[in-house]
Amino acid sequence: MNIKDAQLTVDNWIKEHGVRYFNELTNMAQLTEEVGEVARIIARRYGEQSEKESDKNKDLGEELADVLFVVLCLANQTGINLQDAFDKKLDVKTKRDHDRHHSNEKLK
Image (tube, rainbow, N blue to C red):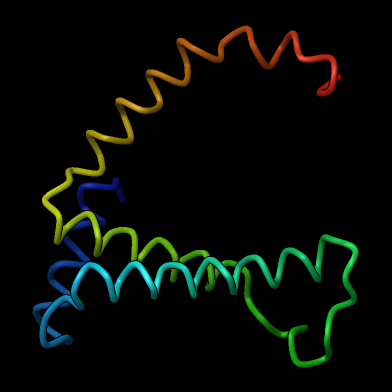
């Protein structure tokens, strides 16, 4: 599934299962909350913090999917074609960073 199709799938889900999109500020707060859940898993599972017993069954993929869902909601409700935006951003990063990372001594 490409990003355009994902946006359409989320929009259809909202229409079928939701009442409406939450407003943009609510979705921004929800996105922050979901990113926090991802950060908690990463910090405890891959970082230096010890993982609590209650966190051991948390699914990182599920939490990342929550982040993606809210990002797609925000794109839909603000009229952003995220496929186009992503393609443009990838082009910019490719041109700008092509040699930059290869010559970074910290990455060798």
